[in-house]
Image 1 (cartoon, rainbow, N blue to C red):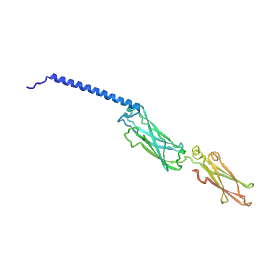
Image 2 (cartoon, rainbow, N blue to C red; image 1 turned 90 degrees about the vertical axis):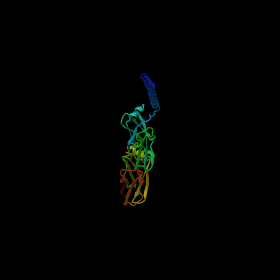
Image 3 (cartoon, helix red, strand yellow; image 1 turned 60 degrees about the vertical axis):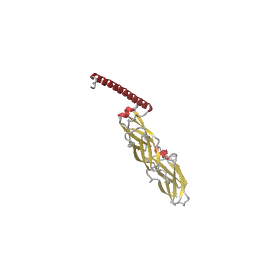
Image 4 (cartoon, helix red, strand yellow; image 1 turned 120 degrees about the vertical axis):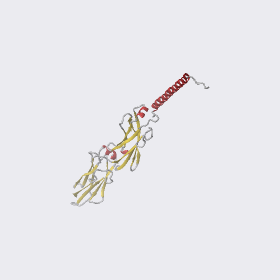
Length: 285
């Protein structure tokens, strides 16, 4: 006949098993909690991101200001509480690269944006584009910006980190060369012309200072008599005109003397008005 174990024996076995399981579960939870804290603390020290904590960075817009010679990219993010919890700091620095494409390709010096994790606000990464960079006036360029180019951060969407804009690289207010006057002295047979330049701003000066403007003198629709050179920023600047005096060729008394001055013959300066670079006037010898 099969022996049956008393009910209290069965209950005792179940009680012991339960205690063993609960003790194991408690130890396991403590171990996992300890590991999580260690990873988090170590990660905070190293500036690392915890596994499975991702962010979504995106380049919202790219803009260019010709007057400031400056370009900027607005970088934003979608708030992720897991990512916030995984980082000890309230903000992160995001690198941004910009490449310009036009008649040439230029990679600008890297900049960065400061992203506040607990706010939806965006931040701008600024890039200086000085004239010395060698961009061509009158040329259209496309600026492509990319946030987190080295994939420092694990993201839910890697396809929205880039954005671009196109802009015309030209002076917002162009200078204007003008042949102001021609004066002739019938006694000495000497003539003087004066050339001035308007709207010669600081940004314009950065482009043109030191460059040479040539002016031709034509007498009676003949060969050029002189080919004078005037230096921008030195001879020609805001409030400063350049002049040159020359002797007319020998003619008979009473003959017609037509003097024509043509400045910037080599089109060195991109002007707001190209129609006042030439002036002619009739005199009697």
